[in-house]
Image (tube, rainbow, N blue to C red):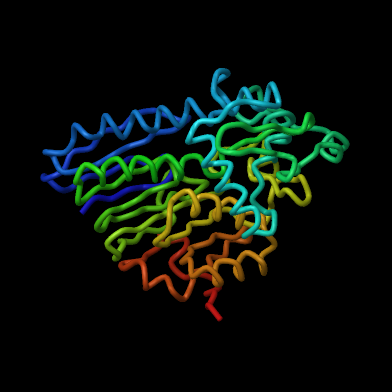
Length: 322
């Protein structure tokens, strides 16, 4: 059984029947592990991730989404259309707490990943966030002149799904794919979730379903000056979220959806966040900003061998599903 650590820790591989390949794509480490005889298929999987990056990246000037942000109109390919369609779906499901037009703030004001700075509150007040102003069909999209889109809140999960699709279509029966905080396991795997403030695991567990999606969102070194200015922007207040440090979600759904849900939950009010996860039957391990850990009652449906490092062995609160 392999051990996979979300966010910045080293991977540990224990089985002799599989091989791993890893590349830097989409601004992070993306990896594939499959049976030895199938390892050449990793090239096809990585090519899909590269194509997705070329489509939806906001850092590549020639990507489709960069052209949309710059020109306010562009032709779409399959990937850019699908992330827009998924975003619209999740926007409705989360009552607007997932909204890629926060790019107007993350890209224009904070400039995360590109000469970062802290914007004046008055600039934040006047920035527009409005997914309804993004018009698109399968071939073309237009954008309101004051908007930008940023798919950092779901893009890696989407890439994991497409890579998994390639492997399945080629007969792979067992794999693990990871892209930073997003992992998909076909069969089972062992996961360690990094402590956001130390290079040690916060928690670890083994998956128990035949196929499992895991997504972790949090303040993992993505902030300006302090965690108070983190990259998780609440679309309602236009401010960085202050309630959660780490949100790990586990479910049997697409990674794109789970990634987007993790982003949305990270910026929701607490009661709404836990209610949303219970409604969608998503297992979770959430570290709040007061140091308390909240674990869903249904966690045992998805994982076994759940444990915490010494500091967190006794969670201050156990959140139960209604």
